[in-house]
Each structure stands twice: as structure tokens, then as C-alpha cells.
Length: 87
Image 1 (tube, rainbow, N blue to C red):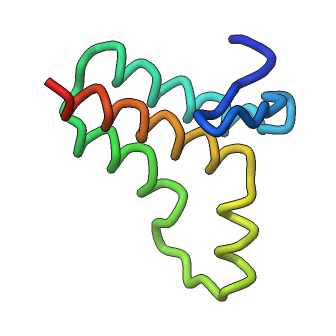
Image 2 (image 1 turned 90 degrees about the vertical axis):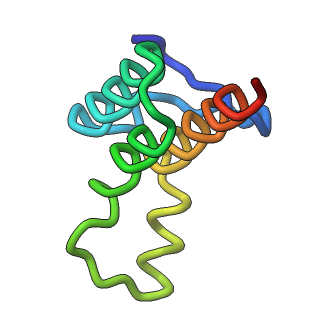
């Protein structure tokens, strides 16, 4: 796996900031995209594990959305959305 991920916004994220489980989750999303999985399945696989069974406060949501893991997952899904629905 590469050491850095560049978002569509050009922000660069050091992948070492993600835990092993988070990097595995990102890899799973990438594999789904590479296999041309249904967009809605990719979306579900990307975000359900991050949000499932959690009761968020505003502060929790800010922390989640600021996390490298969430930013990368969101970026991967957005890139796939653009590709999936452009044709």
C-alpha cells in the first residue's frame, strides 16, 4: 500500500495515521471499486462500519469527519460516484 493518499481537494494524508484495521477497510473499499461493484454497495461498505451502532454527539461527528480514515473513505466513494454515474 502506498504511504500517502491525495484527496480530490489536493490534501495529502499520511496513511501511517490510520490503524491496521482502518488500512484494511480502505483496501476493501479499493478492491470493491476495482471489481466494479455496485456504487451503493461500495457506499454501504465504506460508511456502515464507521457509523454502525454509534450514538454521535456533535463533537463525535466532527472527530469522525476529521479523521484520516473517514476522509479517505469519503474520497474513494466520491471518486467512484463520479466515475460510476458519468457514463
